[in-house]
Image 1 (cartoon, rainbow, N blue to C red):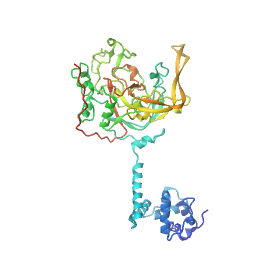
Image 2: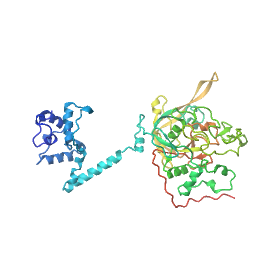
Image 3: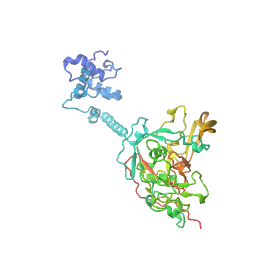
Length: 495
């Protein structure tokens, strides 16, 4: 129990409006409520007046400003109500006139003493800075995201974009978990990811859009545009077709120009697969030319003989027979039906994402399923920089094992692959340069259309199959103003 305060204590100043008969116990409640537990008034040094003691307490206990500074009528009534057990909102007595307790912080601003005015001014600046930093923003919500949220609500999406609500989505696939090729096994295991709300373009960037960026001086032209006599490129260059031959740097330049960014691999996959984690944007049914633009035959060979290649015909073609090479081409955007409001998430053009390619990005201990779950993954170095260098003392490898599995009603021997975690005595340096492409293209066979497919490629690669799709975490987008700058020299075509 605290002893009764001395006459010079600020205690008398804290409870001036409480009736005299309540001084004994209720003022003790006031004392307990508005002073630190380890603090006693009798322990304060002697001061000439209670006012000076009050200022000393504020300056010495700046982190407890609310303990002694507010002595308005609203605070006094609240003290009495707390003692009487009035805790419900309907029991609270609202005084006729209330003064904001925070205003007592700024009292030194109006004093004649320069040192007090300086202290009050610094306090005001500190509170304004704290209010600015504590304002909820998309970036802060993304950094503080947990498995349970909080998730930002979907706002009115910018023109040409769609909101993907924050939540738990599926990433990866177990389809190729035991494939002989290590790059195919890199998409395993199937796991959960928690993502914040984001926005995605409904269509891929068109030639018309990219040309506008070139004219404004923010984007570089692709090399093949310098060759007007090319026999192949004209069928890829109409205004409404997706811009292809895009490098990763071109994709970043364009998305920055319109105030957006590249999507992360997890965000792209969440938009393509939906909340149920479907294999393809349209569901789990096998691909068809009505759904996407891709190579129909041969179905599982990367570079077969050209004479054997067959591609999907144009959507407007009456004859639905697959066409030969030379008639293959990208389709104008939005030529196929939208799935979940987004066009061409499979086929037409491969799409760059922000992440560096790491074949162990999904690695986790299968005996601990919780270790496989991730929150807003962005890959090594968060996808920033031209080259990513990390040092790790834990590496993942592969171990093969011969096992009997059932196939077509028979037990056959198969080689099964399992991840092995190894602890190093010294950290090892890893360098990542390649980026990730998603969604497949008109040139590749059906397996590339799976949303879980991961294709690594150098950021300088700009083949006629690579396109751009942008995203954003905010709805207020600012396009950069045109600038008068000479574009980099384009090598003239060889004669």
